[in-house]
Amino acid sequence: MNDPLQRAFAAASPRLSPPNTPTPLRSWLIHGGVLVLWALLFAMAFRVGNVAAWSVGLAYVLYDTVLLLFVAWMTLPILWPRPLPAVASATRRNTLGVIVASHNEAAVLPVTLAALLGQTDVPDRIVIADDGSTDGTAELLTTRYGLVAPAPGELSAPSTTHPSLFWLRLPHGGKAVALNAAILCIDTDTVLTVDGDTLLDGQAIGAVRRAFSEEPDLVAATGVIIPVCSRTLAGRCFQWFQTYEYIRNFLSRYAWMRVNGLLLISGAFAGFRTDAVRAVGGFDTDCLVEDYELIHRLHRHAQAHGLPWTVRVLGDAQAHTDAPSSTGAFLRQRRRWFGGFLQTQFWYRAMVGDRRYGWLGVAMLPVKAIDTLQPLYGLAAFGLLLVYLVRGNFGVLAPVAGVIGAKIVLDLAFHLWSVYLYRRWIGHDSEASMTQAFVAALVEPFTFQILRHTGAAWGWWTFLTGRGTWGRQTRVGLVDAEGVRRG
Image (tube, rainbow, N blue to C red; front, side, top):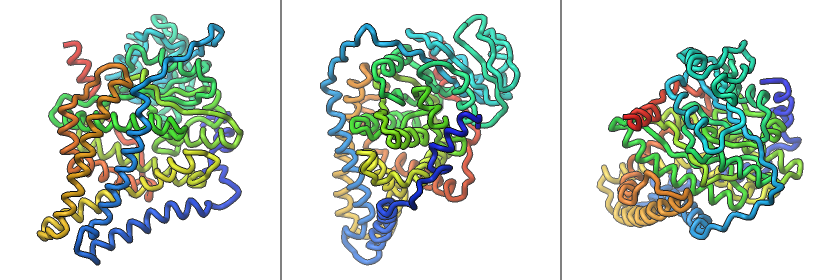
């Protein structure tokens, strides 16, 4: 990591600069309680013969239902959006730069750059952080975009055809390393990180710039992302499931944002106040989910220094991103995501239950503590159902079927309601349809949800062994979509 960022990171990260006290008792009790509760509930399967035998499943259903109701309640303001406050003419318009982290993304870079250069509010700077690409990236940037290759580690002169476009050539070190190098090169108030496989909608930059210009305390923000998969049969299925998953997830982020408890922003499309990112040391090069870890560090820094920083999700800033189109790619993605989540939860365990962080400390982080074992609860519940079914244990299956049926009805109502809310929030119709949402609610609990839990369980192996890497990424969704559009 670069020296200025390294010093700031060492001071801001609990991993390198741990608190003076050991892990607080409240954190031990919360995390340990989740595990002990699972063991006790799972043991019920071998001690009773009624619906209580499926207690681990009942707990899983109850937990998911409570979160669902919380999100439903906290997203109601979407129905009655407040008018935007009048902005004083003296409000300073923030400068905004974009960093496109790219490693062997020559196939999709033209799509990404076309979207950036075609914005209604064009960025002041666009830096291609070329992380040691060995495909046709260099040729693409020189021949198509008028850039002259700089020395390794240096920033190029501006493009002869697009004066806001620059090229930062780096040896391959990973996404976080490339982002940190670019953070030191960019000179704008706000910096937006965009993956090389992410396509911003035409109004996205304007929405992000406006939010940071109008809200001095806004330190990080994410836009709404829509997944795009390949046009194969498998790709269409994964896009279908992930579309509704993303809708629910972004509504959940809106809910937690309202209590200043938002932790998860999407690094594929994330805005940051540049000086704040530098103050906490940039991105963690050892974390599998560097964007998620950075938000924890920003919250921790804000609390330690009495700063009123906030994190938001912006419904009027939207983008499409390449998403996994096969079972293997999906499991690898969720393995990395969950492994990185566990890393971060462990490093920031002292914040769990800490009232000084408000809702973030007393609600969001304890929820995340439960989520560490959510795949264990989910897979155990599903496995027990299969055992009861094989054994023909209808004394347990009959009442359990009633519980599952009631949960599916509730999920169905929420699926349909979430699609309606989502459309109101983003301001236009989405790729989601009510009919498909209905079908997804019926099918997902026994298919896609099991796949998600399997990937998360694999993430536990990644966390415990420390063998996690980004892995090789195959980008097909945006390429296919662009081909269809041109055709």
